[in-house]
Amino acid sequence: MNFCVRLFVVVVGCGSIVAAQERRPNVIMILADDQGSIDLNCYGASDLMTPELDALATSGVRFTQFYAAAPVCSPSRAAFITGLYPQRAGVPGNVSSNSGVAGMPEATQTAAEIFAGNGYATGHVGKWHLGYTPETMPNAQGFAESFGHMGGCIDNYSHFFYWNGPNRHDLWRNGTEVFYDGEYFPELMAKEAIRFIDQHTAKPFMLYWALNTPHYPLQASEKWRKHYEHLEAPRQMYAAFVSTTDEIVGRVVRHLEKLGLRENTIVIFQSDHGHSTEERTFGGGGNAGPYRGAKFSLFEGGIRVPAIVSWPKHFPAGQIRHQMATGCDWLPTLVSVCGLDAGQRTFDGKNIENVIANASSPSPHEAFHWQSGRGKHGPQWAVRRGDWKLIGNPNDTSAMAEVTDDDKRFLVNLSDSIHELENLGPQFPEVVKELEQLHDKWEKDVNQR
Image 1 (spheres, helix red, strand yellow):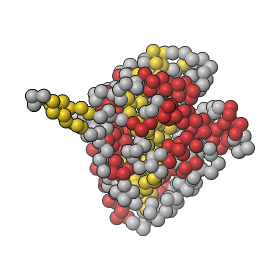
Image 2 (tube, rainbow, N blue to C red):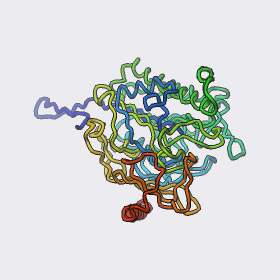
Image 3 (cartoon, rainbow, N blue to C red):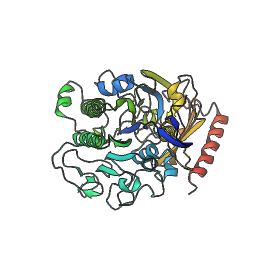
Image 4 (cartoon, one colour):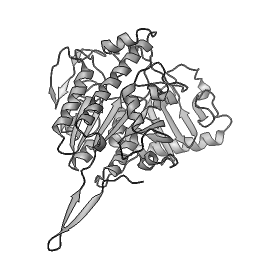
């Protein structure tokens, strides 16, 4: 099914032709930060209250085999707004949080540049983490408006980056440093998103809302801290921040409804990767359910994420999709659905509008690849083809099981076991060889710059 905006041609007078087009849909792309694989009530988290995101899923389509393009922030975010593998986007790993350090290359075309070229107002709110120079900050990457922090995280009240000192203030509006001392950043994000929407009701808009929650520091609102005080730490602190996230997202969605814009706005929600088990987040708090791994890991718990898309009266409502899809897929899908001209641009992601429309439509992905970080045996990488998944140099940040030197090539079949606890490599050496060759070919391709 093709959801493209229809074009009507009207003949007027002496053979002159006037093309009158229905208004293209607005788009809000929301990317959560370090939210675990099942950390929404609609994904099975029975100890969380997430009514707003659950309602978004009820109004749209929820994915169960949706993958972030990387197990860490910057590369996943680059893929989300470019439709490219992070390596091809020029962001193979996390970008420095230091001012004056470049990130995603200027030549990399973003969703904002494509939407702006098609008459959309474009805005960024929240975390950037894709470059901290004038040439690589949001306003130089197609976003006409930007409000947020450029590094990987901030204190939500002082807006300082306190990790890997020296301490430094990090809050910017359109490239100019601004100060909102003591004001709660999640609230500021919601206000800025609403302000952007209010200022662009007369034309289509695309807003990239790059949440910094529930990433550490886990500074939830008082309301939700009290609500979860019965839980044990660190789930207590993390759960409160997830519900804080849910609440601010709901506030913006309800504002769309108030303005009568909801039925003409596509809302996308995805986490950038799995939950953190870092010391800075009290060693955990998130939940990957049955999946092994967490942030920094290419086991499922590090890359399988909650993902929802909703467009009332256009996309199906209250449905679940089990087909494989990825964070690279949103932009090519939006280009098609919104009827955009992307020029000669090609994507690594696939158009998943048929999957959104139909539960029986096959995934457009024959295979998908990941590569991240450096371990003692080299970069961690993975390839999934069908139900087979091969991980090279695996890293289990969930500590669910020991990774030994014999596991340098870790093979699983996800149709048999989603737990990834048994290495099937010794039983299927021919599959290991095929997938390793596939990875080598992919690596050479994406690194041709």
